[in-house]
Amino acid sequence: MNHPVLFSIQVYGISIVIALVVAVLIKVMVSVTGKLERNAAAKTMPQGEVCPVAFGIPDEDVVALSAAIFAAIRPHHILHISPTNRAWASHGRAAQHTSHAVLQRP
Image (cartoon, rainbow, N blue to C red; front, side, top):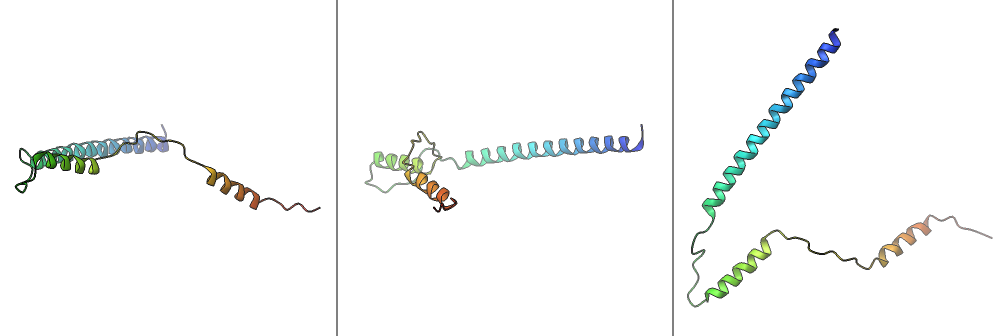
């Protein structure tokens, strides 16, 4: 084989090795950070009594407030998207199209 073909094969092989090394490093970093996050979450997860509540507040109220706070801060999911009135969009498009129209004079 001639020199340019051999050189291009070597460059291609080196780039494959570098890509594999980077992929393995990324995989190791993701697994390590995942384990660290799980360990941190397990350590910070409240067990038993979550917080001391002043005397006189019923447990049911604390549970209801805790559920409301959790519902407010957790990720939300879109359940239904309904079509809306698009009159404003059609009027805007019509105004845009007529602004480009050539004036017709008699």
